Length: 198
Image (spheres, rainbow, N blue to C red):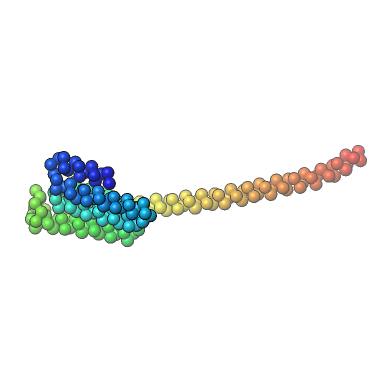
């Protein structure tokens, strides 16, 4: 929310009011996502945030320098946010939508509908580069998040095993203490008798 609001303000102040509209829209949709999150609708909030971010990046690319615009650097951020939802289907769908967005922008650039310094000169090369980067990012982020989740689950299981072992140790300690008391008592009785006879 804060980043999109600052971006919209910076675009207005820098004389690029076209870029401020998508950023202001993102700001509004971030507020909706926060409202959904406070209502406990985490999944809906995540989908709203992802959709808003993807639409904003796409709009910024169309309004800016195509796939060569700095806004294209936000595609991996979108993929990271999707991966953090721990849903493989959502990650695949988000990656596919990012690749589709890059393909549309590249096609608009190739046919001259989008005026950039590279219009009609590079063909599909920028799309291929972008698609490779996005797919590699999605796979790497998925593997990283899966490893973190696996490590967290192992640490939790190990903590539970340690708690069980501690409870068993406490029970063994209590049993040993009872045994020591009984042995001590049983040894004291004959000694008291012997002492009495002596």
